[in-house]
Length: 209
Image (cartoon, rainbow, N blue to C red; front, side, top):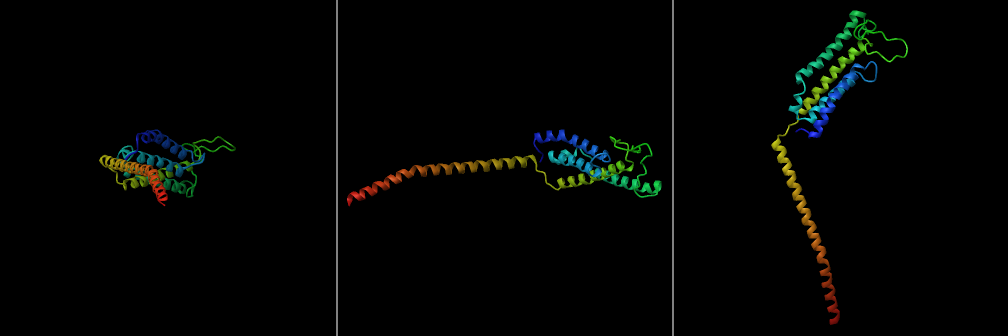
């Protein structure tokens, strides 16, 4: 069962922004708060919003298959391990920042003092952030998709039948409430007549004495 048109419109607007922001958090993790785990979780949140706003089958049409998403997870793990092991071959140390100051991609040297930051600095740190981002995005997205696959989606006919049943229940409850209100009004209207009859009987009894 999918959400209404307002939720779908909001999802279409927010999901691209969520993906862009998640990518930004991953890539700028060595310069600002964030990193691979946080950015990957943000992107996976966009996947969760997509399948929650649309029917699962409709939402999956916008996403890679679960098999391909698992490849993202595996690619992130392999990239992390290879980057860490490359430090042994290049700099004689596991997870050594062997790219720092080497020039090229993320290899710019960090200037001394307070700087505004350069995205091409950090060495292996941004590479590891990207690897962790792939890993977290893949793992959380697969979890979300499997959770939604465990839910049985109702058909349109079943939704219509449930709506009709709810409408009948509401109508029955309204009729019972109206009947109770009429009975209460009739009882209140009968109270003065009963009181007048009791008073008249008491008066006649007093006259007879």
